[in-house]
Image (cartoon, rainbow, N blue to C red):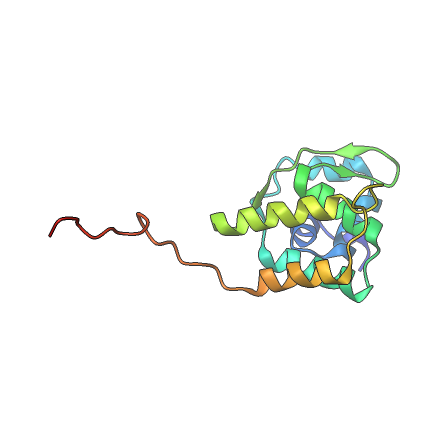
Length: 154
């Protein structure tokens, strides 16, 4: 199916979900077509699964580091830079349904956005594995008000 026959809204949702093919198709689509749809894309939420999908593709060598960096910049800032150099955005992208998701996703996306930089612009397989392992860990359950203290003097 060509991008011309696919609506922009589902492609945006797929891109945020870590589908790098959908992201690349959006980059290659004319900015005007995407811009018309960004005013009503619905709720877009970056999830742990999306970050895991992108990290795994980078780790496996099935995603170019440049594309991963562009994707990270997109989900971090909400701007899509098209192949012709034009820009679309801002697009509102939320991070994770849980606060713990948000902190980890912010860290990972910021790191992926550094790919290609002169300093820290390469991610080793060890670093990728570390992030993949952190994403695989279950979320800690909130403990309410924090630790309870025993009354003193009893």
